[in-house]
Length: 57
Image (cartoon, rainbow, N blue to C red; front, side):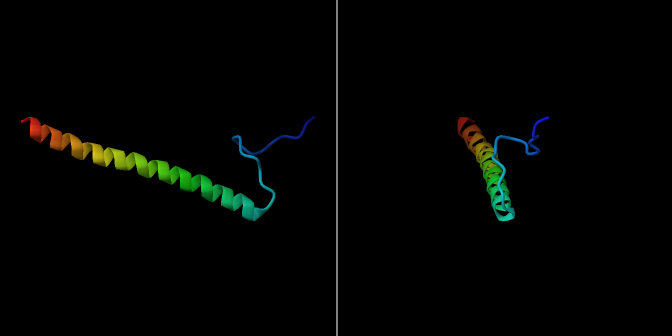
């Protein structure tokens, strides 16, 4: 019938191996950045809650 697209998502498939690798690296870097920001918010948020509780008591 038609040509099936084996890639998932909305990303346009790259032609060269180097382009594919650099695309995957960029995606992973973005994921790690988001994960790091979430962890930082969790850690910093807990510290603020403890300080606020000490001030109220």
